[in-house]
Length: 238
Image (cartoon, rainbow, N blue to C red; front, side, top):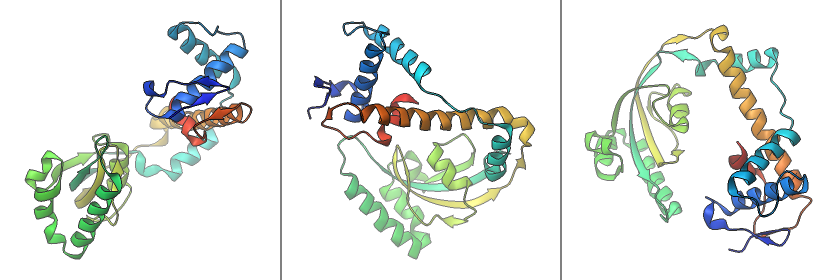
């Protein structure tokens, strides 16, 4: 795939996606326009110039106390101490080059069969799961917040379901069929004790939105060939 930004060809092999490669070149060119770095600068000098460009040109709103408190009230489940979930799962792993649609279809078929006959979970976990826990019927034991990837944590803690969760849960590891066997509730952590954590989370979200908007604005004023830049800007600049 050939990607160019203002007729400058971008080396996409050094980046996880062509979009990120294009965004980096876009920001490098902007830093050059501002006189913060030269075209023949070293990699370290270029990265510092990009950081300075973002710091000078992107305004990130600071969340107010009122906004922080309102967000805490709407997300109180996230701030509990001692919550435990006893869960099992079946992992359909995604590896580089794997046929994702085929893997998803297989996972959905097995989920449908387990929903019809939950007693099949143990057998299917041993037969199909790509996680070592499959040897034990997919049993993960007692889990607390912070012990799993965010998508998995959200699925098991933000839902009151006991039994097999209705849909597949997607994480960076693949597709999961999850069964929750037991929930042990902890205690709510007061807002005063997590105020800084809430503010940091909201600032991170605000920064991601501001940076994404900034990159899209820059992209609209230059000639980019080979990729479309939209929300794909976010992972590079977060």
